[in-house]
Length: 242
Image 1 (cartoon, rainbow, N blue to C red):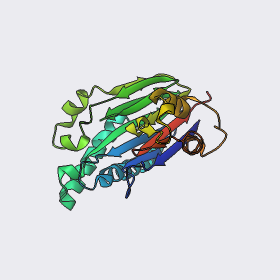
Image 2: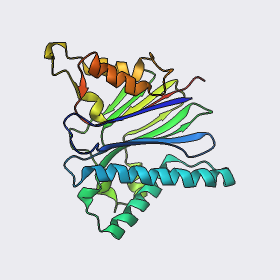
Image 3: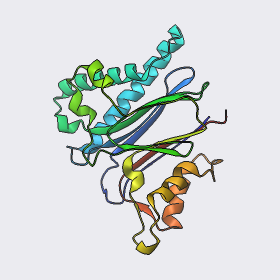
């Protein structure tokens, strides 16, 4: 299994990339992956995506050790419950406001032995499985996790509609909505469609021998096709040879 990542600041953002991503071992045969997109209208929007990502990374490290000892794999539901609990503790400890804790999240646990994956999307973004696209669009009004910190977790989780379970895959990607923002400002008549961009980044396999496979593809779009990404972008692409 090969995992490729890329994280790019958008052309319209000048100070910080508000997206974040993590890839962490969370079990002997499981990896935790996530892409996050901080809310531009939130306060210091880069903070929430990085904070959530750092918490998830720490959860993965702890659970990997626990799974090694107990041989009990963790579920996505458990990870999210731990994430929310940690966010609430930090919110109280640091005196954070809700608008400082707004970030979208596509999170998944991948079982490398069984080519199985479970995902939950909170907000918007894109999942591509063997060329089949699942887009989550909330009309620029994502239902951020930060809005639900005081909700009963079980009720909230059971009402989530943007869940996706995959029994087998060969090529899987998750991406923030920056993937829809590539623009050709030099020649608008040659603007590529959203699908052409998605196909280039999430479906085409040319260059997979390079570790920076996705960076090279984005650079090709910029240098050779005059297409630049205007919003921040995080992509994780997983290729399974099984």
